[in-house]
Image (cartoon, rainbow, N blue to C red):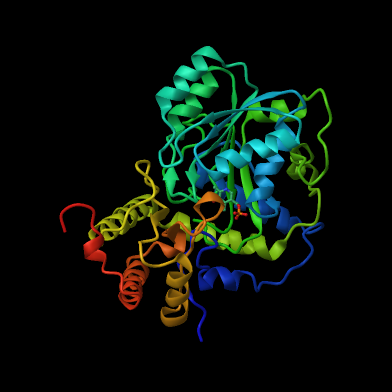
Length: 373
Ligand SMILES: *Cc1c(COP(=O)(O)O)cnc(C)c1O
């Protein structure tokens, strides 16, 4: 059987050109001048994607490494950190803050709704003595995109460093790191970028570098220590041997994404249509607002379990969809319409298969429509 059509919200489908890029000779990235240049140019392309002039680095490890490294490097024991929490990743950020000695203050929101900028504003009026704030652009498990532009600008006015998990939004949602004054933007290779899993990348502002380099206490550990990256290019020295093939793939994937000037419109268009198609079938979206343009989460309809649906989709239609995790496990189904997944033909195939799956499970979707139908 062919590999299934991957419609999960990361890892996403990896295009043939990207896979082919990994077949290039490996060489030795520790000594070859050409690889330092290749790495630098790849960072330049990522800056284009993030709309920033800040430094960008790529680390060898999946997205989680980026989140942990940012916390490990910016936060010192006793630092107060505001953790804006309207989902699983927003809440989990607080764990990293605490792991590195930070004092996490959670500003909690309804998990079915986007963060409310006015609530953040009012909160900060009373309490703004924070070194940093952590926030999530797109909460992938629930399919909610947060209004980070206004929040990050507000944080900057109070002198609070913003650390933004944009792992599942970069490339699919509008994001302007400099315009929005974001200090640290965190990304991963396997979401919208549609490269294989294994890399994280981040932009680091001057204020963030100052916080990292002028700490009173040393950074614990090495792999999560961003300070060791400050002058990699000037010194032509990587803190550790780079995963050459992964970076070749990342570059090819980023180039593909950048070639599509209409990528943001494409994501918005597909996302709107996915939601409309679900509404048409009487299926209920998990979010009440803040609908993501890269992933849609909807409730498992009555009369079936997530596992039933997942299994039929895979075994009979060869399509891989996702459930969710944490408190959403078995409650919602997720379709990842990000990066290489975000094309009309793939969405149409997915819905055709979903319809057949529901039919097979005797779920009469039209009768499930709330109210009228
Ligand atoms: C995917 C993702 C990460 C990386 O974590 P994994 O689940 O281990 O892939 C981090 N943050 C967000 C918002 C993500 O979607």
